[in-house]
Length: 311
Image 1 (tube, rainbow, N blue to C red):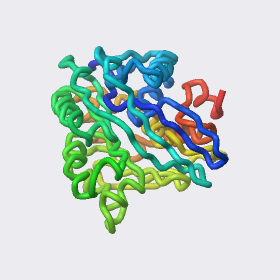
Image 2: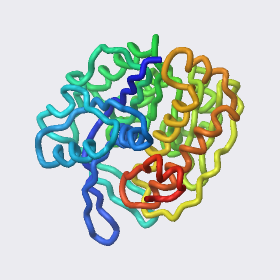
Image 3: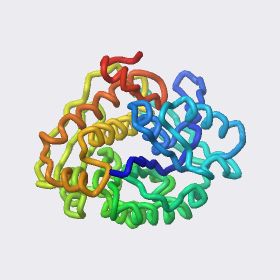
């Protein structure tokens, strides 16, 4: 097994506008949140992204430096400027986003072997970086496993038809795909959720998962059997980063179970049923529950996960 776990994707600062008029700034970006989540769960992670030497870039650098087991790919911190996302929270704590970003990740990528690659969101759809991400995934496929979260951003991805032109080739390269029900309803209007899961399994995905907010998640394995994973009860402060925390918990659980990390792990995952992935799904749900119980994209450590509450 190749030990290298590589997360590729955008690093930006979420400028969060709350209903009471307050404004907070949090380092964010879906893949950054997943990288932080995996590192806090004890996995050595390399993060390939792009941010600059400005104030927002220094905020990201400090946030990443505080995560144990996390290193930056060469070139990650050498962009001209740092991207931002304005997140506006509604009465339920749900966020809507407006983005100001440039995505060109090629200088932060190399050809060294990868045991497991995770990517998704803007990184895999926005040119010119999306092409580099797709090439990195294609190069990883012969020897490593891949997880992917489409994390649809309609304001950046065009029409659903245009977004699917980018998203479906990445699905076809992936072993694990996780998306939200909102993502899928936008990408595949009118198509039942279970049918979308089955379509992804038909493209070669071994485990497809849809998160349903407070209603838990749907999961389908290669045998096309599906089940609902209940949500872990939590008092919601906001939902920023909840899906990313679920993703990092899912990857973590599958890595610990030997179901991700190399070609042999891929074969084991393809042969796994819902019982075989149950522990990973449970870990994902518990990670998300801890994250929504506090402000911002703040995934749990392994100690918090073990205790079942924030430390």
